[in-house]
Length: 81
Ligand SMILES: [Zn+2]
Image (cartoon, rainbow, N blue to C red; front, side, top):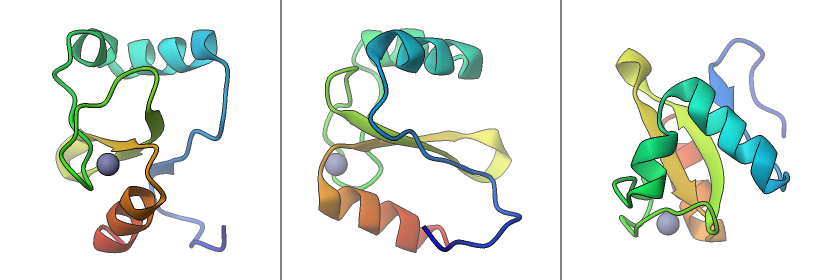
């Protein structure tokens, strides 16, 4: 990636589930994902631990989820740039 140095993006590249869960827990959103309350910022599809590909911090410390669709990742990253 060639993004600027001072943004607040968090990219989670293919990591193990246990790590993913810890990241989500640290962000306070693990329960949301487990309960099916998290939606992909790109396509609106429900995001689960299985199809979650990335997390991004949005305005006001909101957490934006991105599913594993390549289009979604590109859409969300572009939209918030
Ligand atoms: Zn999506």
